[in-house]
Image (cartoon, rainbow, N blue to C red; front, side, top):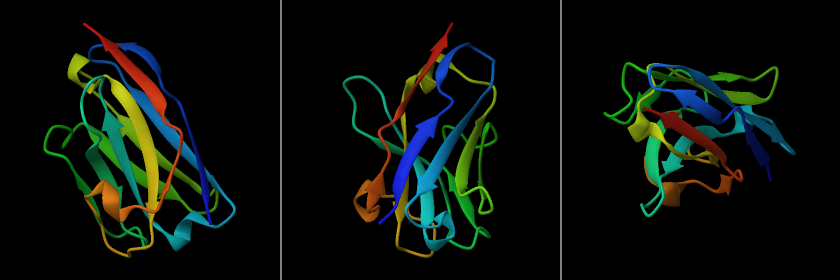
Length: 124
């Protein structure tokens, strides 16, 4: 079983950048496909980005393509989400998740382990 802890959230102005980190413990992050999801107030949790277990494949929600980048550093047992050109619509709690599937997965139901979330607030 893996434990996930997100960090790096905060308050940023529109157009700014943040880098979220997801530190894993208990098992190596290389054993899992990884994803980022977000949940805005009053809305359901939605897919943001994912990376395959081997790291060769990534995919993104249309709303963040070209602005966000997911990456993994297996040596540090950490997953990152680099977020550029942030918009007020990106305001949400961001969650890191791990799946036992090898390939990129898009549904929250396909992820087995979740972090506690980190708040990102983008002001206009």
